Image 1 (tube, rainbow, N blue to C red):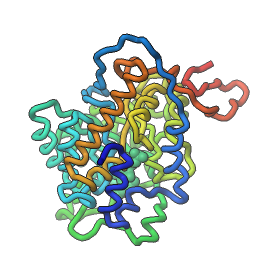
Image 2 (image 1 turned 180 degrees about the vertical axis):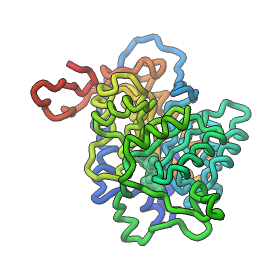
Image 3 (image 1 turned 90 degrees about the horizontal axis):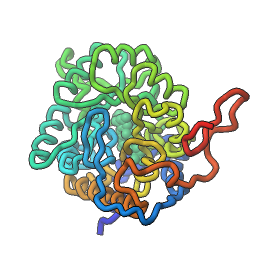
Image 4 (image 1 turned 120 degrees about the vertical axis):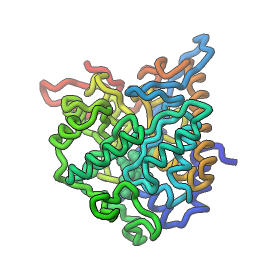
Length: 376
Ligand SMILES: Cc1cc2nc3c(=O)[nH]c(=O)nc-3n(C[C@H](O)[C@H](O)[C@H](O)COP(=O)(O)O)c2cc1C
Ligand SMILES: O=C(O)C(=O)c1ccccc1
């Protein structure tokens, strides 16, 4: 029976071409960070409150103007048609049914207009949460601007700019397997260039991209902008200064720079750095309802899941992703109840016991930041 995220992972592995399974599960170099993300959640301990008389529990959130029925977002993942013939249409229908925000990848195998239509149709009886759009800023700003216009016209409610990819991470499993591109018949729909007869261009991951490009983006759109992949607290402060509306605290699931810390380990420091000025979405290693509770308790406004969505899609298409989102909602609700909390606003750092993490001892004159997010 498919009862846990782990069950989906195992089930997907039996169905998938091993090369594709490696593409999904794998990460950069020694995959130290891939493992660290999950391990760090396991090392944290929850300390529940009792006798709180809490009855109705609400998992609902509002994030940058987007209402959702769950604090679990679908992080952007490329190539859904690789694992399911309906691709991102299936994912979007499942997310809409669950009222979960889906971040559409720039590297999707279905165009954002069609994804948005599927989400609207599937959410007709309920209340579909909006789509957000993930973007790698291309040095060709004209192309980037056209894509931003497209995503906006399709109804996307926020832009998520991935900033951890000045070059592509070294995915050694893919290199060994010779998996370097999409198979024939599949393509990144957003990279078809209307100025060049629909020729599909590669996604540029470019070290030229700088804060100036972000300033440019800020000037051409009024949508909320989140930066995905900021890890250094100084960059978090810079992001706020440059007008970012939110951060996705992400190490790309361990797929970019290997040996960076687990995201949950960085959260208290990141929270202290932005001081509540912008919301933080955390992704990387979220596999259980208790992981969601831990992240929200340490200051995240929401969490994202990447690989679990691909596994569920591979296992059962739209139905699989629906079941995945349902089981995480049930686990989260159960964990909230056992913590004596009614909703996300009842969660605070006092509920989490951490091993001795936090930054290295401060230099003289620097502020000390404690692992619970407080500044002493
Ligand atoms: C197969 C795969 C494809 C991904 N594609 C993208 C992408 O196109 N854009 C992006 O910003 N992040 C991408 N990511 C990273 C995810 O958005 C997310 O940060 C990461 O998967 C979260 O960790 P988790 O897989 O442990 O949940 C991808 C991750 C995976 C596993
Ligand atoms: O594999 C990834 O993590 C990723 O971000 C990506 C981006 C573009 C195309 C394929 C994968």
